[in-house]
Length: 66
Image 1 (cartoon, one colour):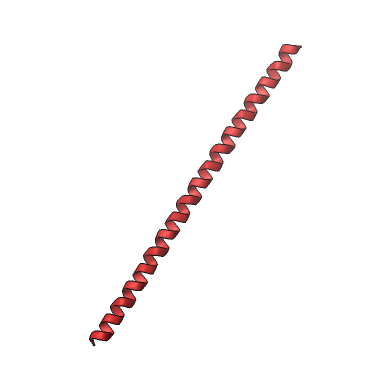
Image 2 (spheres, one colour):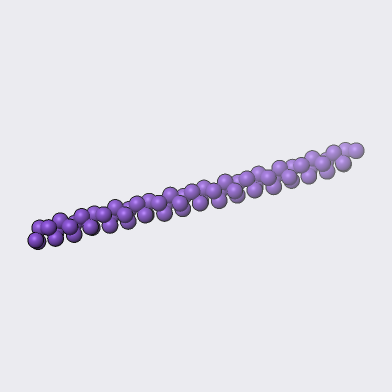
């Protein structure tokens, strides 16, 4: 009887470990995806700002030259 209980406990522990590992992996993947998305958004924002500034500089230069 004790062996059966032990087996059940062991299988439950294994299941818990598997669930914990899966949850940790999922959380890590989600965090990585979020970080990548944030970095991409920041890069896009910086590029847009640089393009806008460059266009403004070109417009100012053209106006000054004219």
